[in-house]
Image (cartoon, rainbow over the protein chains, first blue to last red):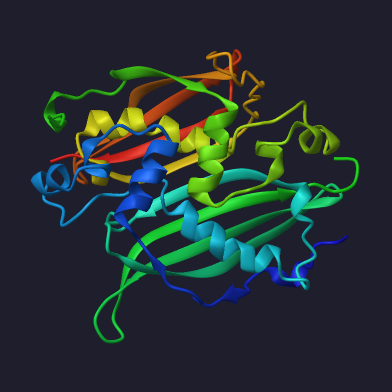
Length: 153
Length: 145
């Protein structure tokens, strides 16, 4: 299987809305062994000036990996998921993710680079919170690189 | 209590944390994150794709390592940027039912750089499991008041 070099520059529009719930923040926080009370206790979050529970710094991976799935499952991309290795990850928060947010992600393929018989693919998810009417507020930019191992790699 | 920018200096240590990991933790992380790749919970599948065994999600390691920074900063929202490279897998052995960890991750943090104009401190994390650095360039940018 060969990675399609024309992927670079491709974008996938926001398709589904992710509703950030309190219990999901608590569940994710427990799963990464987080202990900060602002993830669990609404009053503790409010004492820090937030309107509701604050998501852990890597919570946006849930939304980013859903967006990435559009690319990985795109038959035109030529990616064999069982040969994918996560190479790097970055989160840039324009503001924290808070319980009650309604988030969407736009996926951009920023780079495709052949490596051996495989390829390194860099994607960027621009995550926005939906506001009233058509307004969207930038929340988080995530970038990640995946290495798709070629045969024998 | 949040640290005060003026009291910080580059090279200062912010603390250490030891994270014990079991196979059950990986199942919990899979459910919480939606990443159900079987290399993180099924030994036969992991070895069939030439891995030494079940490995932790890179995002589990990244996500659990940053708690040292979050607790130090006093507010999770103060972590405005967080990045890493994944260099070595964390192999988690099956210790189900024994009460023992299947892997241990050691996290330590140091102030790497201070930016007075932006009011930010870069915390550099060293993350080690089984004697090897499993994350590289693990850096969290913390906005301080």
